[in-house]
Image (spheres, helix red, strand yellow):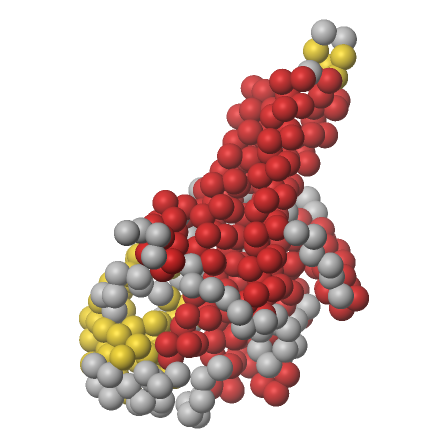
Length: 363
């Protein structure tokens, strides 16, 4: 499937490419190929570009765009690659904008889209997160349970937590400094971080109750999977491009190694994986924006993108030969980013099982 962009989307992608190129430019004294940690100055530029407001309706002060638009930005960010949690924050803003009844919603939403506050969504497929108290918007409740693999928790001022209440699913706001919240941060290979969160009767505030939380949470989770897949797509695209450039300049037996048939076959296989991932991703994004998303499709996208990105980035290193395994060459950071993103929100095996379960193919 070829994605035909509207004029506004072409402009969005072009502006994203310019900004990402500026953010990814070499910094004084920086070692070539080094993974870059979170940078506050980059985050400020991201917020000023309006990317965090892409999924927020215009009535709430956002851009009123769709997941296709956010994925175009995320794909470009994956080519840098950036570890800044663009997708996490943008999806959190979109979910928050869909809630009603909380008096502090607009203030928190403004803080997210302006870049002043980082808020990330927290999902636990194991269902261990539970609320005690009345799950009505604005109500004060207590949250208990544990969840692992929360991205950007080290930078977050708070969390939008999907939890179960006695009445059904709910979306709650928890401040990072809330009593009873244990946040254990661990670094990832791409210079980012994930955290394990433990809630022990932690004070929380309900943003959406059972009457509307299920739809908000389902949409937010699907969007997280699509954005992560778009970043994986960008990472494998760039790694493949670097490998092709190298094979055109590396000489062996008095000719470029790109002329070797075995390497040409490898390059074509990698290109096919990239294009299959791109086609599935944007086809599902279009269905999501049109409200025609079938259960399990976003898991199919995440599973394919995770598998393909790991294969393509590993292949890119191998096509560079021995130098590809050194930390001095930039191609290695794309494998590191693919490793981190492929495990985010569940790895390929987990999403294949989820797809089978949701589609009834798992027996």
